[in-house]
Image 1 (cartoon, rainbow, N blue to C red):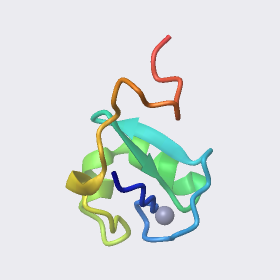
Image 2 (spheres, protein in one colour; image 1 turned 45 degrees about the horizontal axis):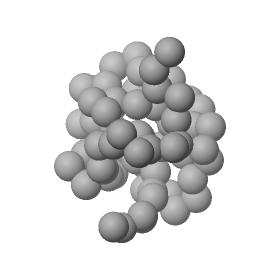
Image 3 (spheres, helix red, strand yellow; image 1 turned 90 degrees about the horizontal axis):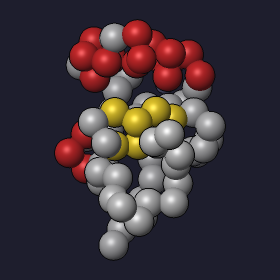
Image 4 (cartoon, rainbow, N blue to C red; image 1 turned 90 degrees about the vertical axis):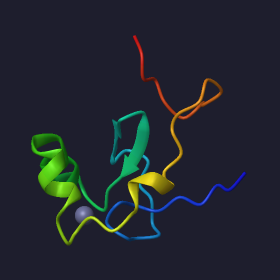
Length: 72
Ligand SMILES: [Zn+2]
């Protein structure tokens, strides 16, 4: 299992508060503004130059994932 976490914006520094769950994947951002922008228009953000990570490389959340309160 790889546990390589990077932000969607290409930074190695991950702030655990700056993430969202999109298509069952946890996506981290370099800053709060990016997160807000993504939530506002995911498709646009995904196709922007600022989005550097390959969505396919982000593991989907499994049943054993401890990271997040996704449901409640
Ligand atoms: Zn960013």
